[in-house]
Image 1 (cartoon, rainbow, N blue to C red):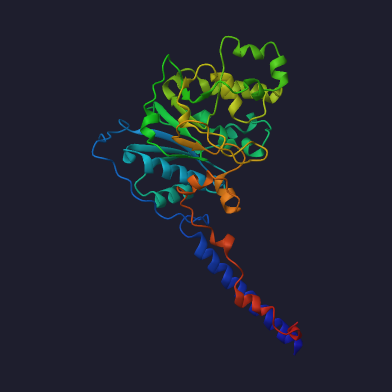
Image 2: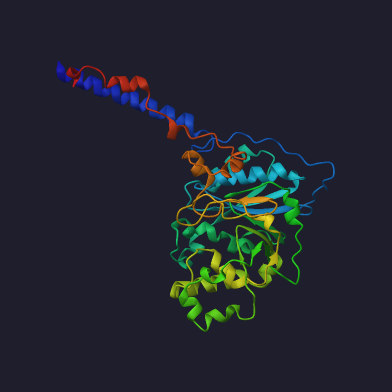
Length: 365
């Protein structure tokens, strides 16, 4: 008799667990297939002063990456762009998604469309094997993600009629009209524009081996290089393609594979190619470093001056700190653009009715 009761108890437990698990999946995954829940964002319309877009004319072109790990940040960034834009319907987003990411490009497209039904966008598929053999170890593993290098290939991936683009990282929010940034003029045949920080110690971005090499270190001999952050750039894709700048960046990555000349992932090759020949943009357009350094990710305050864009570059990400209950003061600004409504599987507790099952008298077992 005891054996029969024991077997019946196991069968009942198996049935209840199966039903609960199936219901949990059905409730959580929903239409996006990821377990994320983003409600539909408000519909932001053009003002009466906005020009009527015809093809690519009068469109602000924005490029960003999309992946599972940073998806929450990307959605907040998109929301901030359209929320503050004077002509949100005149913005076109070019999203770069990796082939082998846990979230497929198809699923990401569906999620973006359900969150921003009126958004103009296209998703491009980035093959990690394009760059994987050029990536070397970095100071932080996250910097080795192949998608960090997708910006190198915008000139190849985007249609030829896209002759200019604003590249944005996924860990930032705008608090100003992106049209102002779009109107940046790239003078003297410059290829990119970005806020420059000439007071920064430029030598620390490269190893002692780089500076002691008389051949490779002379790359800066005829320039006055300044540090700039690649998370916010205005890019002239016509000049980029004509100058084959993708190959120039890859050449430095190949040198890095042979001899360690830097430790900060995808940034140093841009400094090697462009530093000293960048169109300087007002610092308000990249208040970077809000994620702290690459080791501790501690809290930081804003740089002096006005702010149009806040950027959580560094180890600490606002959504991680908010979820962990230890946000930095500026993380609450990011939170106002966050559309994430939780992951039910992550927070779903074991049903109390099943828990009570284990309180049955021990004689059943």
